[in-house]
Length: 154
Image (cartoon, rainbow, N blue to C red; front, side, top):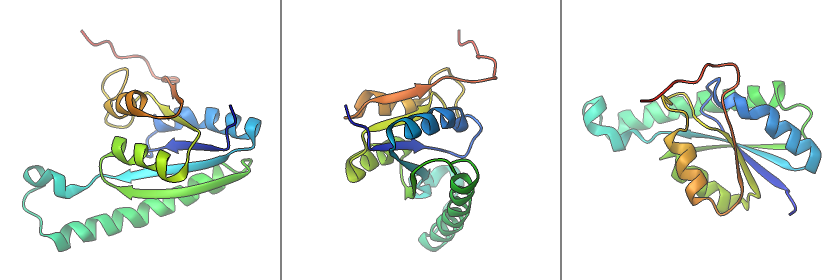
């Protein structure tokens, strides 16, 4: 199996960073591109939670979050991925699992590397990771917690 493109989805949490060492190692081993993806959740899907925002207000929030995401992705790429052959930044709006799966197809990704849970994760294996593992057309490497005690779920 030839690995030319690796996708690393991040939600900018410390938990997402668990996968970063694996991403760097695999990238250096295979000389692969790293595609770093951040997904902005689409607020229009949560009308009841956030009150009644008009489209202009939602667009401003997404625009602001997109700007911050681009800054953080630039920071990750320049400070944490310096030794990697090539890294490409992506920002999408929508459901994180769906956008990850879409990016796999759009960019012809060969492998996904992600943490078993992100910033909202309260269980040992998060819903985004589960959906990606169950639906990905390519291998998915999941990286368990590092340095954080496991939470027991009864």
